[in-house]
Amino acid sequence: AVWTLIALDYSIEAYQGLHYSVDMFLGGIVTCLLWHLTAPLEIEGELEQLQKEKQRKEGGGGNAARAPPLDATVVAMYAAPAILAFLILAVFPEAYVNYFAIGYSLVAGVMFKKDGFSNLLQHELLCMLMFTIGVYL
Image 1 (spheres, rainbow, N blue to C red):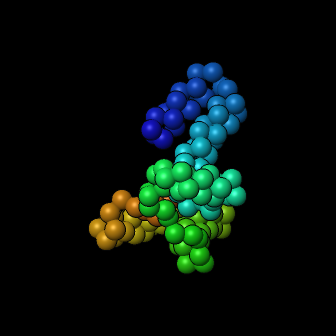
Image 2: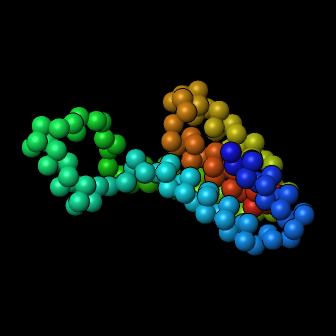
């Protein structure tokens, strides 16, 4: 889906020159995709807790498994690929980007073999996509 959006962006830029508005629209779509990706990791607010307690008292569902709360280890695991992707864009010369892309791909392969297609793997692949788009566009 992301590559389709990028192809749409290229075609509109080539034919109409409305790149700023299209880039803002596609940025909004990518942001929504990222929000949906991290939604299971959010900590419940007071309203959600009250609704859950009300369902338990009424004998309703509420037996669904819940993601564990965030701790420093989880935050560090998600922050490391994003910080490295930012550093690749901001600090390292463009000549080294392919090596970083190969490194990210190898790490993704190991993560996939070890844990399957997890949220952390998807996050790592999205970080790789963002720094490659940032460099090559």
